[in-house]
Image (cartoon, rainbow, N blue to C red; front, side, top):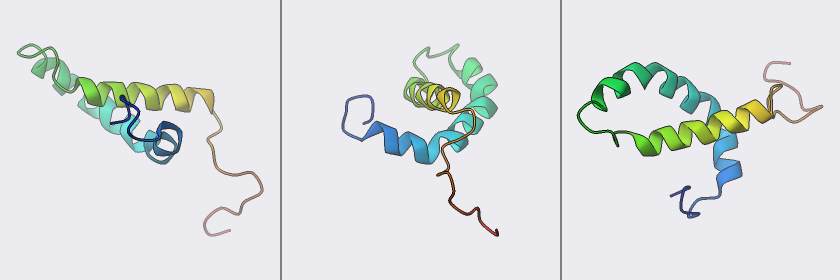
Length: 73
């Protein structure tokens, strides 16, 4: 959906980037094995994970609002 412009990319990625990157990194070895039979396996998930990584790389300090209290503070 995001790849085709049906979902607003920036706000979605801001909300899910961390978990998506972590899950993709964990699954990467399994995906490589699965792609021996079908090279397109999980290609949309890889696309999403790559978009998330590019987003995170542009924000090395995160995107938490400045001067907004942290949970428990």
